[in-house]
Image 1: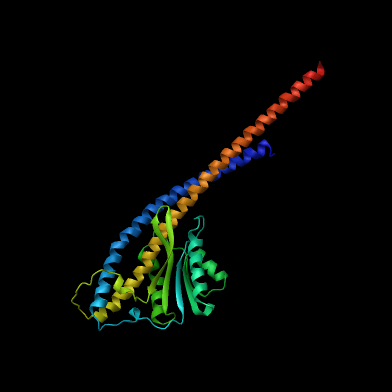
Image 2: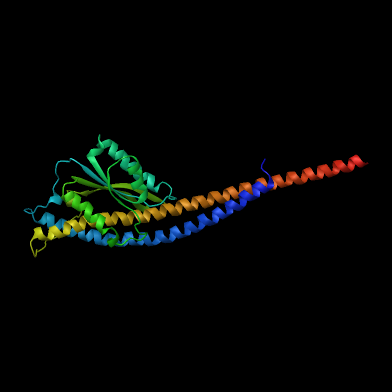
Length: 286
């Protein structure tokens, strides 16, 4: 049995850990609230740009654009969004596992795909396994603006336009609620499902031509898909961190209770032993 001093030391250290995890839980909960607000406030913009792009693309049957056309798949691009740090439960591992499973299903060679990683955890995972990570972005702010990911979003679309890959998938964690976040796959390029993005097609008069409008709108729409996925992922990250830190705090409290019980039992046993020795000594003097 551990000594009273050892048990007391463990109780003290566990209490300090509990204070840290409780503080981290409160910080993550505060960030989650703001990140959730950012993600939800972006939805109306996404819905409107989807409506406009769909109406322009579908309302002009003679208009074509490379981003709207499927081509033979020679190479696939995967844009994976994870966090820069851990302590978030299964947040990172769930996304990485989904990507890894899809790669194993679709490809027989590492030359058939490339990876763009936003977040240190995903970048390091794929680099260590020898995957072709052509871009790795770390240090994205907790509450990112579009300017923070403009460069990587533009580059991802440019690589598709330059035929560095023939399709692009987004992998991120979709925020459902504070207690549910789902690892998600979304096809970003080519935009071949435009007819499903809106229920109706609005008639527009174009100035300048529809081709010139799509030349500007389609890259913006694809960039918005990436930014929206990042906002969604950030809300999920802080929700996962909040849950993980709450669980850690609860486990610490349970451990403290168990250690306190062990301490009291050990102390009681020590007192009983001392009383026994005193009684025994007194009896020996009689």
